[in-house]
Image 1 (cartoon, helix red, strand yellow):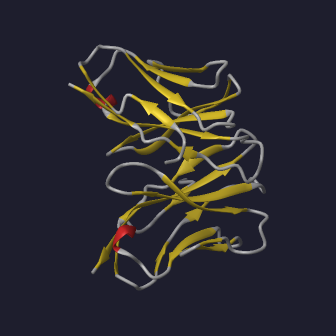
Image 2 (cartoon, rainbow over the protein chains, first blue to last red):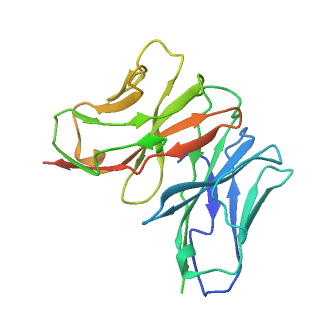
Length: 115
Length: 114
């Protein structure tokens, strides 16, 4: 158990819908990362937050948005869902990405299925 | 150009033998970190080992060691005394820049044969 929690574990929804994925980082970690893992695209970095502020952005679609709250938990919002958004979504956390030895620890993931 | 390249989509190894999983990387940042993660069939991503670009010695963690060759930009994972539970997908990743953005390779599927 990495100490990073993600809810829900599984999510099944229809095209055009909107969902919210939630992540709680490990105790003491200030940075949260979101990744998407699909069969054809591999593991893709979406976005990173540090202490409530957006720090880095990857291949995140405009239909997707995220935020990190004052208690450091994070939510990833996916809207106007398409079949291609079906994937495993990971949240990871780390203490401080400015520190060279900083390590990301991953949550168990949320498996999203869009029908 | 790919930042992280894992050239072996699949590997087989006999139980109790050692196996090397290849990883090459590309960066112009002098300060970076290299990581290996294991993803078993259950799906979770498990951190295995870290190597910093300034580290003089190769990293080791139990049965895992990292063969770091900076000039060749390679960071191969060596698993000694393979166990059946080592069967999984293994990802190499690099973190660079102040923001700590990470790039992952496409992974190598390791199958340990009894």
